[in-house]
Image (cartoon, rainbow over the protein chains, first blue to last red):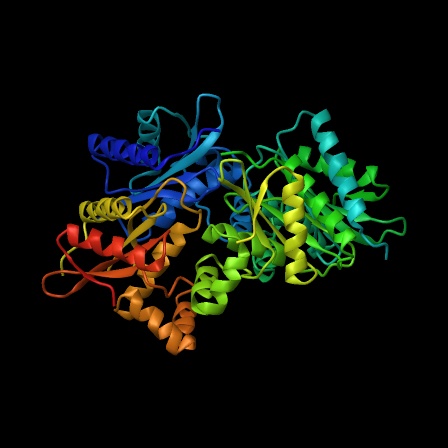
Length: 143
Length: 143
Length: 143
Length: 143
């Protein structure tokens, strides 16, 4: 498995912010987690709300927990609300099952971590996450 | 009451993995809990996500909590969402009310523990749990 | 970094139990965690108390959190009780800062996981953990 | 009150890492919190343990909670252990009352945030935090 280095995490965040600027998004919070769902790097743009750390990390955490991008987590949450609520419960309440948590896959397809973004609409958050992952040379898997 | 020994728990896990290999399932996490909902054995196959310990145990815990396999827990969660959410709340958030938590019953019908599996679809998780319990000479009660 | 496979984890547990039998230890609970402190395998011998899952995992978790075997965690807890209590607090109460949590290091010295054992005296728990790790071809770092 | 911008937070982290390299410290985790104790930026160097996010933030959180650098928090914890344990309890367990959490003060002396570092000895963690804050043009208050 490819390791997710701090350098990679920072590249992802910077490219996500660049995408946010291009799309004129609201201020974002961006969390980059390793495959074990532990934080590698986080940045909150000026003006983003105080809870963006937890919200962005919660999208990435949920994606890693089920091994699918959070677009799938949100679909599950709509179809089987008790499923995602239960997964969040057993995680200690760490999951935000909403679009904007994107898996980072290496060339072999292995999951090396996930990016979660919160600040604008869920779809825009996701677009910035995908841009960040691709700029760093990895494959984005939004679910 | 028949005691749930470690030997039995390991037999169950190995037979569940064998079923998973036969059905070509994704990597699984398997928890075996005793009748008091305490962990006897757990194994996580290489490549299974970091949260499989809690997710698999959460299915088995929920089954033991209501004295019915987690297929019934999921049915309850659909019909009366507040019921299973509340049961999880009072347990300290330990329940995943989803198919794949199967009670282990002895010849007399007494509950001696439960198996929870997480990794593939809920139905496949349950199939592996049933195979494991039956291979160990017990009766599987999926709810 | 060397990955901690399920096969390795099981080898460690079996060799730890063999050491326990040799030393005539009380029934043990053995947790094997990966480098991100997530459970790979657990086994509880017949007669071991219901809390051995959490106690054994708590020793291994604390060792990984501070990057030193739990013999050092226990020394810190004696010298600076607020330090280990605080680390446990920020972990969500997951740490048992007591001898018996041993880091698993590969040839290069990198931490690939940790073993925690609970059931007999702390020193005996540690001896079984070391025996398990060495039998699997890794270096045991008790702190 | 001077706002703690993301640019400032990143400057602080980079200067803290530079100090760490100069002093040949172990891999560090660095959290920068605003005056409301919410995360602005975090970076974990390759090889730092999985719990460094919570440990570094816990030092900064404790400093902000009592309005004094965490050197004072640790002194309190030694003199009146129940005091810091209680403060951590009412915070939901978010405090690590140990040296290495340093208040960021502006020219007027107002608290604009705090830096928490975890990875090497507490004194070295603190030295890196002070270097980071001063490099960004603020006054470091270690307590």
